[in-house]
Image (cartoon, rainbow, N blue to C red; front, side):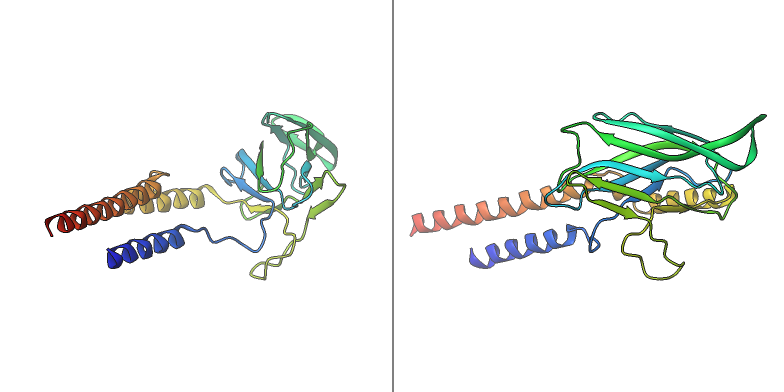
Length: 234
C-alpha cells in the first residue's frame, strides 16, 4: 500500500498546487467595465478589498473625470450601503441629447451602515451605470479613496506611465474603444471558448478534482480489501 498511498498523496498535492491562484503582492481597488465602446453606456464595477487586519472599510469614494465627463451616472442599490452621486460645474456647457448641461457627476460616495463594513479577508463590489463614454482611445482615470473605521484613508490615485511598473496605489482606469475593437474582442473570446469547452462551466475544475479524489479513495479501498483477503487466506 505504501507506494500507492505515496502516489495518491503526491497526485493530490500536485493538483492542489495547480489550483492555488497566483495573487499580487497586495490587492488593489480596480474597475471592471462591462464594455468600453465610445459613445455608449457601461456598467462600471469597482472591486474593493479590505487590506487591514485591524479595521474595516466603511466608505468608498470614486472621483469621476471632469475633462471628459460622464454625463449620466446612476448607482446600483447595495444592501447595507448608501450611495450618493455628487455633481460639479463643467468648464463649458455640453449638449446632452438636446439639453444644455452646465454640471456633471463629479464623484460617487458609498457609505456603510454599522455591521455592513468590509472586514479583513473580504471584498465588496460597487456598481454604477455611466455614459456616454468619450472618444475611442480616451484613458479614463477614476481615482478611489478607501476609508477605514480607524480613520485611515488610502488614496488609490497613482497613475503609472504606459508600459511602466505598476504604482504602489494605482488608480482604477479604463481605455475606451471603438465598436470594431469590441467586436474583435468578442470574436476572440468566442473562439477561445469554442476551442476550450471544458472551461465554460465555472465548477468544472472542482468536479474534476472531486472525481480524482473519489478515484484515489476507491483505489486505496481496493488495496486494503485485497490485503485483508490475502492475510485471511494465509
